[in-house]
Length: 69
Image (cartoon, rainbow, N blue to C red; front, side, top):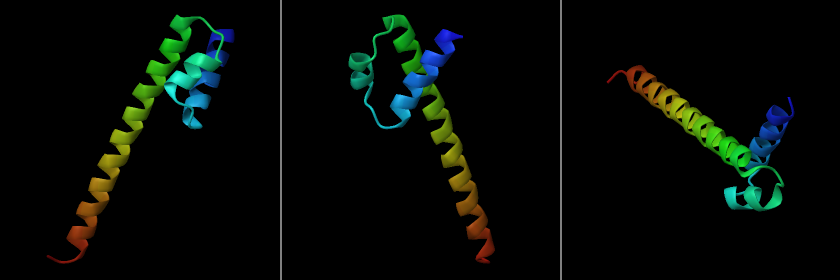
């Protein structure tokens, strides 16, 4: 459970605006654990951004249809 808690804290630091290098310098945890948390955070962020782009494009398309063109 400690690994999950530490990983969640690392992701929280990243989501609050700390840079990857800041997190690596601040945290005293095994490098592998820090690297894995950073990779998971980046993957989750990319997935979220892709979902938001898709939703925005769908909304733009729907608004275009609603204009009667």
